[in-house]
Length: 473
Image 1 (cartoon, rainbow, N blue to C red):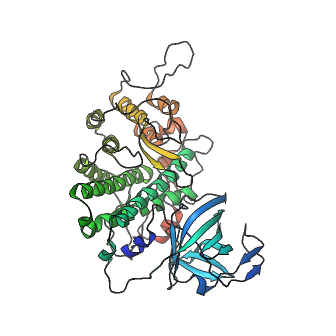
Image 2: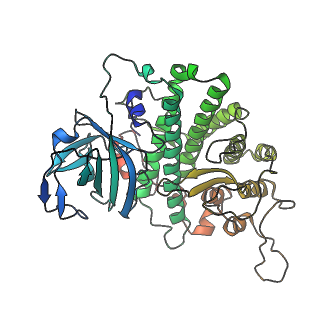
Image 3: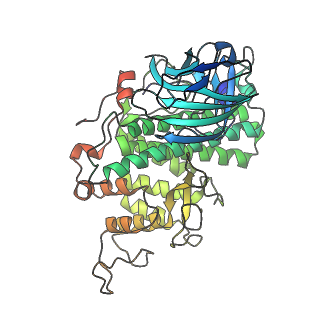
């Protein structure tokens, strides 16, 4: 994976709560242009000129996806079109922009790979409506409403540290970490859904879009967490000792969660622990177990640094317990996992059904979906905790598990762990990893041996000369 360095001033321009950011254009004095050379574009659009867009930033107010999907589009995100032709867009590979036939085209500068096309549909002062279309094999079509926001340009004499002027700026970057993490989890769950479905189990290739999305969202999350951790001395004075400790613990938890899932998905992966590396260097793959051992040390160190959270969308002490137990199971430390799981106080949680639009007592920790409001990805629930105990102890007595009675004879089945994963609510996260951990993935899903790991995305192999593909792909 190539380390792509993000300067801190550019991150703070985002000032938001989410993923790779957004898109836009437009200013007064535009003229109509007929015709369209892109799929899904209207027959009448408005020309965008270089003078209108260069050196501007735009914040997404609302959006509607008409075709395809894009987990990076989220309200509150900001895109920046810089004077030097570079940009900060939805996608981590939207690194440059140009005007072509009155439309904005974004692309990945090192290879000139096209990314998205933005067409101006209407304008009212600083408010614009944009049509966003994918290129190549991306069939995305979305309509975006954006507002022009202040963009100061690159600071010349001030230091990056001068941008840590208040808590809100720092916390906005923390929220961005959560948002990228949610985008990663969304793509990861889509991949696992494909792999655990017998009719699609063999359909994942290095060119599968969600392979690319999961990889890039994961490493974008890592980048943002590293940026905050690298600059903690710059903003530490803005917080009390307890506030700062909890903030940094949250960030370390998010980084550990993503790295754990990267290793579970791909095995050996690039291991990047700082944002200050040379932008021109490429990160090779690192041994999975070495990364897991380091993550386990991280979680052991920070385990007592978070309190219980009423906000289920924030990291908490109970979420730390669950991740630490997962790491112990991944490392084969079954007895340690049992001890860790026993430390969780289950009394605040209930094993009843909840709705996906409510973060009730069923949830320990969840991530907000990036494409829909008030919908969540449950990461850890009480049922996860109970199934981890069943897996590690081999006993289900005194556990709050659903009743499985296949014969409908009133006598509960002596069902294996995997049966309860399928019987229970909100257990998408963790199922595929549990099957692999128990050695049952191939039997249950019909996947081949090499398909226990996902393929490295094709574009990563093309961009990073240090990267190698997982065997079989």
